Length: 214
Image (cartoon, rainbow, N blue to C red):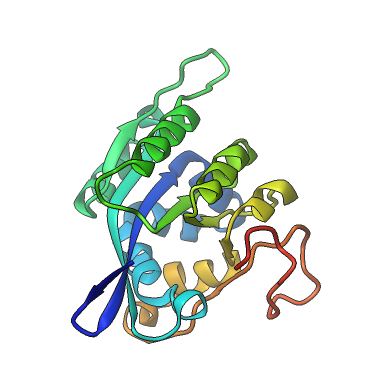
């Protein structure tokens, strides 16, 4: 975390498993899925501007210095340009097998591991995916004293969410980052909470027993 003219800056890197998030949103809310793919600048701004207070308090600004998006160009070619225009590096991950398996997982993991030794010390690694295969990655990042934020849509493995420092609540992301036109301007409180090991009984309470919660 760097100090600049009276406020702190959190340096973040963002990794988007597009196929995973988009297909899950498509099942739950096609309109939200379309917004996620066609207007990434909206939810990136939301993450930068609003997902801070509970984590760091007042006077802190998040700067997403690296933005990566991994997608299957054969299925989602139409969404490449919106991400490029939102300052993402887009990594094409076409199917490598007859069953449609792509190389997103390995590309994302390799990039995260490389970024651990980046000349810019990233304070946060933000991963948008519900793929439990990334659980060992989250644990490794935690071992290097890096904070991790995840967004998963639908059911996620308890082991995966417990390995993250924080989990961004799906319902708040859906409503504020994708649907609410006012979310770009209003100073709303962070809709994130400590990642629970199991679905909580009360969405408004933080789960202090979650693994990785500080």
